Length: 429
Image (cartoon, rainbow, N blue to C red; front, side):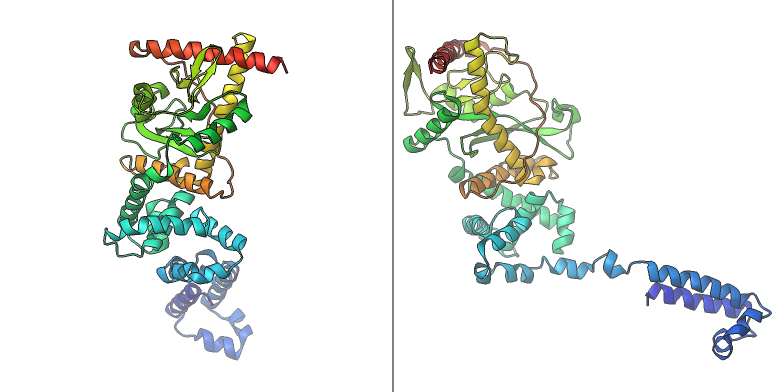
């Protein structure tokens, strides 16, 4: 019987005795239950009326074990011993689909990919003298990234202090964003990868030598120090994430440098990629000639980016160009759709990016860490989750800077040559 009901019943007995000390309620009830109905005192009748109501409520109310699982048993599901029972070699005896589906539901990726992450981070985590096992700490952080959990929620689940969860999250995301970034996020300068990328984009768009698509989505912040500075064009506080994706929706450049109120062109101009492209630091060994113009591998973006020889944008966002220009714009945006889908996969797979609940100073490394994990999943061909829907792209074309006038001129002539060649090629089929 419910313990709280027994307490209330005991209190009522004491109340009856104080109201009618001349009768013994329980003994009278046992000897002659009907005698209570004819008692000269109202106390017995009042007692049984209240007791009946309480008994009914106690019988219909769900028990604590049903409505609120035992905290100790809940947290024991996430203890080191429980994790160790899951992550021993016995897990390899399970059928791969069952094993990996279970691991993805917990940590956002399959068990083999998880072990890859742990193996690469373990030597660095060992230097921190962390009191928790490395694989357990990584699993805990991955569960936070995959499900968007707060440090407080995760601390309750794993029976740890919130400050320790935040500390471990910061350590693991920092290692992902620094130690694993150079290995899994690379500009495609190698001839084999570059050829594979440009050929795949040409099959998609009929445009030659396209090697990537760029976009700058906002990442929603749960809180920000300055709403005016961090409020993006869609009305919520955010940080800007600039990514370049290849045809496989793998990011080959990631930059998080500006609050949400910054426009895409300013963010791009302040990035390392911009300086590498405009300085000639990036050397792509694949040169083509189209209508007398040298065409090196280039990236495509929307009209919010500046037009450069190595970053081509549409002629007109409203479709007011010539037939050749409108055809070019359609194919360019078809190539750009790859990065839009890659971002939708990123936020669908790592839900913390839908509403980032870390401190603003640690937010950039958390975002970059999720991009590294995204690439790992794409390389391993992990199943793709439901896509996160981004707001429709808006914004005016960027202002042309004096230092970019020569780049703009070459970009404009190159774009027109590609548009004319594409129109001729497709219209003659």
